[in-house]
Image 1 (cartoon, one colour):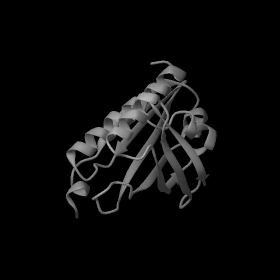
Image 2 (spheres, helix red, strand yellow):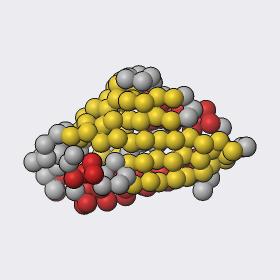
Image 3 (tube, one colour):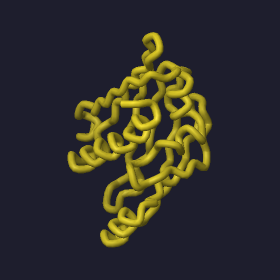
Image 4 (cartoon, one colour):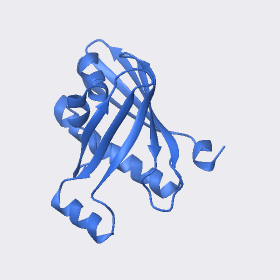
Amino acid sequence: MTQHQARAGIVVERTWRASIQDVWDLWTTKAGFESWWGPEGFRADVHVLEAREGGLLNYDMVAEAPEVIAAMEAAGQPTSHPTHSRFSEFRPRDRLVITNTIDFLPGVAPYQANITVDFITSGPEVRMVVTLDPLHSEEFSNMQLEGFTSQLRKLEARFGA
């Protein structure tokens, strides 16, 4: 077991007044995923989304805000990178696990990290509980949490905080 697998996951929860289908579709449809995925200043361009257990999820993470593009270029980083994932668990409107291959970091050997999402309905509300596997370093795990929290703001604007 590697160090990043041994540490506890990072849990992020949000509850919205929305239908379970609307929240589920954010993860399992091209239009839904592209509508919110990516930290502020980035977007996701989905190439393949096979919403089923074992199905692929391949997309490019693309810097789109001028200040983000400039910062990436100044740091010598590409302004986009391909991401290769699969749905390793898929229970409609209940739970999904996306296994990401982290293979785009210079100097870091490729590895896999999961995003686990549980969907809990209660009357007119849906609670989304997301568990992010820690990444290879505390710095990157913190960046992952910051990025994920940033993209959730897009959903808060849609569903209300």
